[in-house]
Structure formats: structure tokens, C-alpha cells
Length: 81
Image (tube, rainbow, N blue to C red; front, side, top):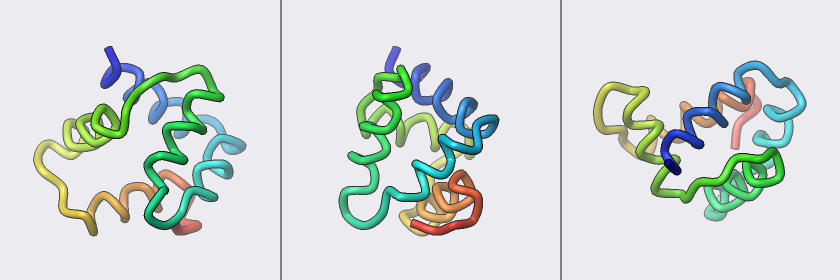
């Protein structure tokens, strides 16, 4: 269930510029925890592990830390983490 919520959050972030702006504020070591908190405020509940699983599923395989960072950067509209 949590991974499905993470996928739904990623879909919502693709459509919602304000949500992407909030995501862009998630930086540093606590970025994933902040991302989960942002998601919860938007009505999506999932764990960091659920989020990672959704990202890996979307990539078709395992992601390196660098790849995950780049994907989050793209999700944030290129604004970085």
C-alpha cells in the first residue's frame, strides 16, 4: 500500500508545480524524511523505504545514490536538493 502511495505522490508531483517547489526545499541528509512529510501534508502516506521502492520500480532496476539524487532533482524541476 505504501509503495502505491509513493507512486501516486510521484504522479502528483509531475502535475503540480507548487508541490514540486516544496519538494525542491528537501535537501541534505534529511531529504527523504522531509519528502515523506511533504507527501503526508499532501495526503499521501508512505515510508522512506516505500519511496525508494517506487523509485527503483520506475527506473526498471536498482539505482545508485547518484541516480536517486538526480531523479529527485528532476522531480524538483531541476532546482537541486
